[in-house]
Image (cartoon, rainbow, N blue to C red; front, side, top):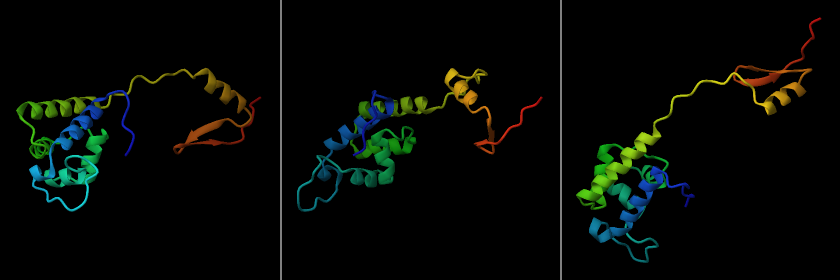
Length: 148
């Protein structure tokens, strides 16, 4: 399983919430036939929950891992139905999604700096006989002639 995000971000809170509630719902409660043999995980498997909620397995896995934090209202409602959430839990799930959607909005870029950091300036100074230029999306270096 992929490493969880560190720092308790909203996406991780959403993932923890979904995982915790997925383990509480048994396959029998969800109407999923249980085959022979042991189940390695308690409750529903990701694949079973995703199928019952009408979303792809990959999408549900991204929700649990915190890679996707902005599901639609219909997806949230479908997950709440399959997870058998009560009204308070359903509201909490909506709040987690709303917080994730707000934090996923990109900040507009700030003012560009017109100064060069000392380390970059040192590197550029050491490239003096053939200074690099930025062109067509990449750095190139070409011989330069000294004027006068």
